[in-house]
Length: 54
Image (cartoon, rainbow, N blue to C red; front, side, top):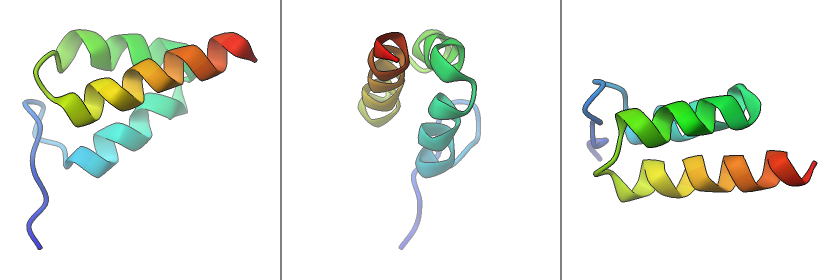
């Protein structure tokens, strides 16, 4: 199975993981650099919401 690439050249799964590494900050960064990828946007928004609640 071939992984989809993002506009940054990362696999979607790796970029989704990176949304959580830097708490809410990395979520905001990925929201800005990946505005068209729904998978990345989902994880970025989830990261922002979860870490804001914490």
